[in-house]
Image (cartoon, rainbow, N blue to C red):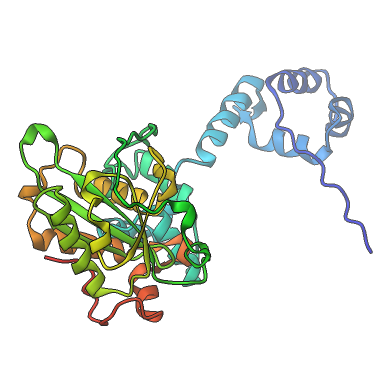
Length: 335
């Protein structure tokens, strides 16, 4: 097997070496002699003398200034996007359609669009002076990411509960469909409203199902879960120990309780609620002022987002393909 030659490291000429070049030239030294003294290739000296001149002669200070200017202008944040108008327009249209940078970059890879860029490149462009006007289309609408904080959950006691350790192995197996995670998000207490949102997520397809509920009473949660179950094939669901889940035995589906204060045991629904919060209803939103139509449409947007974990397909595409929906109408959110 033929061995490749190790590539030599490239080093820029420094100010000190430029001063030595100017001094050696003043003493009548030739280019090959200067290259030997500085231990560089003679072509390096030739290019340096050709490009870095002032008033017809080599000047070390002028050469250093020109080099710094050229290096500073060689690259800038987002230059790959700014240099391609079609690429820039495609990214801008994707952001306006509520696509995240990861969705846009991942879909480009799936569809083999060239030139292709990564999500980090899009974020760098957005955080630069060229792309900041498009940051308003991000779910956070921030110029920089917000530091993460640990979530806190209360502890409740559920009668006749089945602990998560009893969950069948099939619910953990990623090749099987019909296993869900369920949780709720509420209006702020200071608003006086009791309207909440019940959300269930299918673990394999990431399909999101939701319904507004007038309050957190167990009866309201029971009606919401029965309505959700009527739309999809649901075998099991994981829930927390909130008081709204007291009547889980009447849901018509096997429900398993997480350990106390352990939201990481249902990460999909926790992340989905966080996604809904970031995109549409930040903490402090009074859900009683959110119409049923808006609730459905926003959940539909989430179901149509291209997900990296689904190979940049949408949850709705995967759900329809594997028969998770009882009807193929695409209606996966409720009044």
